[in-house]
Length: 203
Length: 254
Ligand SMILES: Nc1ncnc2c1ncn2[C@@H]1O[C@H](COP(=O)(O)OP(=O)(O)OP(=O)(O)O)[C@@H](O)[C@H]1O
Ligand SMILES: [Mg+2]
Image (cartoon, rainbow over all chains, first blue to last red; front, side, top):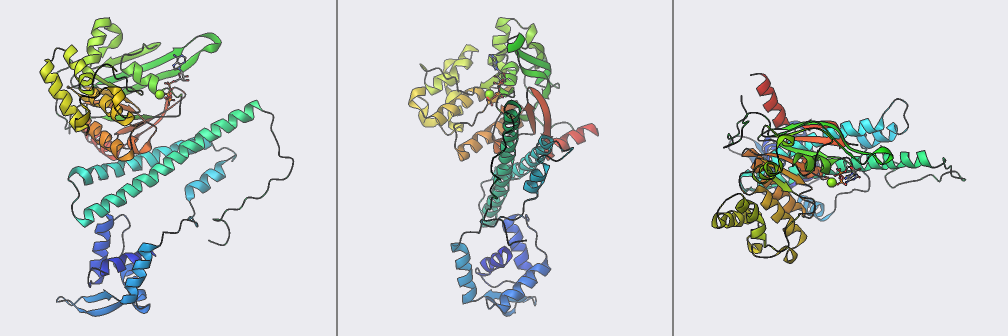
């Protein structure tokens, strides 16, 4: 998982101790996904168990240093070389909420969409301000560039959501218009149950 | 704390909003063919502020913008720019105000085909009495800002759609227009160029202009201080950014 590989990537640049890894992970990602030191040490001990890192003495201040092994490097290279799996999307609360809102008594689905759209756009405005700040001086060091990529990912993700909401609304409007002008058409045969790859075994 | 925006050099109403729409309606046609394009819009935009207008096709965004820019006349209600009610200005007064105070970016660019990029940008300035040399210099600088220094002497039909669009934006930003109105200013631009244009628009507002931009793109709307959602000719919702909120709160607490 990402913390594991994130730590391996940082360790590839030389031996480090636990809280140092935490600091570096956060400055790369602009504290978007804060780690606690406990998570870092748990992950390090699993990596150690799996032979991907090894304890490597202490620094002058007495911190235990960890370094990456050859197996760890192989694992890291595989990670960079393999696309992140998108065929098993995580559960999405908003999609579930809208799915439940369709035809729910006493729920105005367009109001649900609008309040989400407002909220999502507001989050985008805030991310965009962070981004504008990041761009105010040309990002030079590794951490600044990495943070810019992360904040832009947040923006693009929120944008996809906002666009999907626009689409949902116009789809609903169109369906409602069609329903108002045409006699309700019932399929003659029972609808075939649709399956998607996302469905099934998980969670 | 007052808004820390440089005070404008001119204008009868320095502290009031740059643009104010009051109970604005616009109805097309009559009887059965009546279309209510706008149904009572109140909106005020002040110096330093960039407002994005979003909404489905046909919700009245372009109508709002053309009324705000004095390009169309309201059925009822008022448009006030820098304290001046547009309906009280004569034809010439309106034309002068539009030229001097309002930069307008049209959905379809509206460049004059017989003029080069630089001439298109310089023309309104010359009409305003700026010397030809100065207007040319400003135009070239505006084109440089848009990353278009090399198209200065090309005619519109010798430029790509995205280049024409940026020339149209440069034309709206040149001089010291206090109000910039832009209808889908990024339609023909790729993602990176669109961002550059938004950053420029944002910057212009930070320096003391007021802006209203129509867009379908949430990512561009996110550069605004406020996003206004239109539906069927009415404002149904708006967002404030954290910055705008903190400015307003700080002001209110004063
Ligand atoms: N000259 C006109 N005569 C009649 N109806 C008009 C006229 N101009 C606009 N309308 C109607 O007014 C409504 C609002 O139009 P407007 O151009 O403001 O929409 P919009 O929000 O800009 O849409 P889009 O996103 O497609 O550009 C629409 O229903 C449109 O058909
Ligand atoms: Mg329009």
